[in-house]
Length: 472
Image (cartoon, rainbow, N blue to C red; front, side):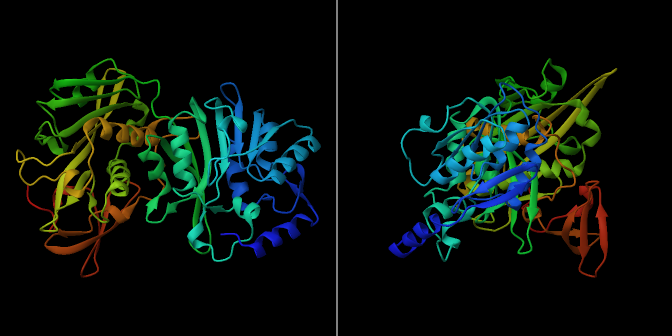
């Protein structure tokens, strides 16, 4: 990556003059090769300012650069530690902190392209309430001209498996945030064909976009909040039960609690349909906060289904093998006929007793292929090998990401956010006209356009036919 010419250039840069800049209310000295505050810094700073210090108020910034975010965090009441793999950034962070009357412990190190010593050199594993990282998010394969090792360390992801993947592994093992902590990371919205979110979800971490910005070239960067899902909630498993949804609605469960069963004798789908059960399928329910009841809509059902579909597609060995049929059915592509087969679905149910209300989310997915249910698909058919326990871990992260409230940053799903419409089944028939799906309205109606140019908003899925859906 770095030849002799680029190394000499780096040495020349180090002899240059430092810059004096003003950022927010802080005066900063930025030496050569040290990352200064930029638009991405402002984006993550805007989120940081909304987080009230909690727990023991311990914060770690990875890749501190000039120290701007660390100094801001200290001014907000956090006890801050910082690290950077660039020794000049470490010195800049220490100097700028003192110049702005703050003490910040700053160490050389961090998550980099290779292990450099022990983690304990630059952090105290698993002890932080908040971890902040403006992550180098430009893949090395997109770089035609490298500047130098220290300059590129703040911009270019040179880790063999990707810095986001390494961060997720460390977080999953409780090496960074405490069990009740949160991480705020700035990264690209997509890494290749897959969402950055799906990298985190696949590691069993809950995540939600809390801020983002799209540039003129359509590149989107985002700040993700990351946490361990439903850590204090009860996760229960039963062998046989009439319905996991009914049990959770009528039982003494708290929001975040979950229940799964090996077999359901009276499972239900939408429109009162019976769920044909077998042992090679996942059946689970999550208790949700009843204050979400007014927000339950076809759009929200579709959003849950699309989040699950996006995660599973990122794990499939082949592209374009998962779709969502509006509003809530998960489909897989048949390898021979190329038609779509239902492999699962999601269902919200609520119950009111006087002033008491309950809300649950039920999810059913076929994990294995079985002859017991003709016309149904499974994850196994598209090369995803998960048992029900592994699938539960993934679904738990999706549900937590959408519905668990963490430090006023992560609330119910943002109903104004863009749905991943690429995964919606597109071709349908309405009133004997061939139509294509264009989107989902904020009220949850399916927006379709006919071949003759007519536009329709559909609220009842029974009024549609799907020509590429295999009969069940």
